[in-house]
Length: 185
Image (cartoon, rainbow, N blue to C red; front, top):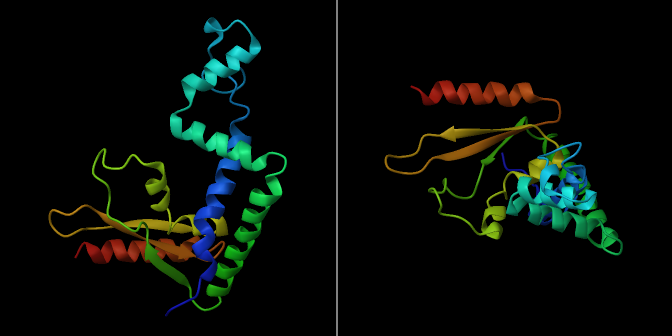
């Protein structure tokens, strides 16, 4: 049965505002003293401990997300970005709630493409777009399971996801198990 999830087209921009804001907030405690890799021996001040510990323990993508999150949470940008993204998150959740009045589970691809070969993708934007089918579910808070599907010979693996209603993990686990058993035949 076809369903409408019209707001999911806004999931990627909403997610990539909300998620970095949460990363920024959560990793602010990563100071090398209470949490994270410590660089006491290399530092001469408290600020230097923070800086060196964060530089050593966080990769480029994490740093990029922290910077973006700090930006969207800063004065003057909170209402323009973060509050708008949270509002869209509420609308996305309502769309899923309405869909689950019609169906017991939703089946979608996990990603728009097959798996990448090692080293194939390094552009952050193209990697973010691979999340198009999963971020709406993350924002809505619905349970989901990604299930691998055996590809044709000499092709990279693909996957699909089963999405369930809130607090109904049993349905997607049962369906996933049925798929697993049927695909072994």
